[in-house]
Image 1 (spheres, helix red, strand yellow):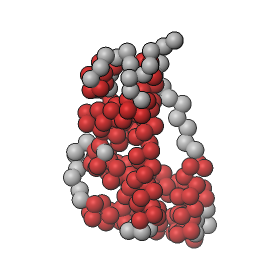
Image 2 (spheres, rainbow, N blue to C red; image 1 turned 90 degrees about the horizontal axis):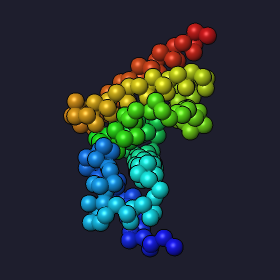
Image 3 (cartoon, rainbow, N blue to C red; image 1 turned 90 degrees about the vertical axis):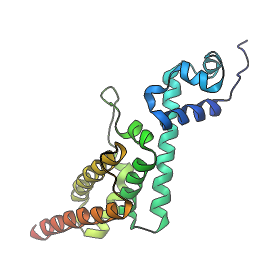
Length: 190
């Protein structure tokens, strides 16, 4: 019979998440985690098979935090819903820089990353409703906006920029309006 766990799964994940929030994923090791928990590594491995399992749980917890940013901003009413998704992404980068880097700036070359159109379908519908363009055009519109938003978020998360959210609000409006004008013009020429 294996020994009784000294910590709960949630306590280990919460502590690991705190470590990543403070100093990034590179600091998350069995040695550092067990030291933070005030224990040896053995109790961790009565709950988790290996550190990769702990890391995956941290990534899942970080995704949930990010989804909370999206829900909060998209339902908050401060911005139109599509814009709110971009503002939430950038706010997450500003307030949770290490988690942002973990989710959106890590090497993904060994992962089977596939974009799921159904995940962004509500955003595409918003673009279509606001512009009258086709689903295919809305998808391209979103990709271009995403590049713009991601670039701003990366520069904020890496402390390259220190734009306040009011200025970010303005630049996102400018980018959106420029794309909207271009796509609607193309749509009217078809």
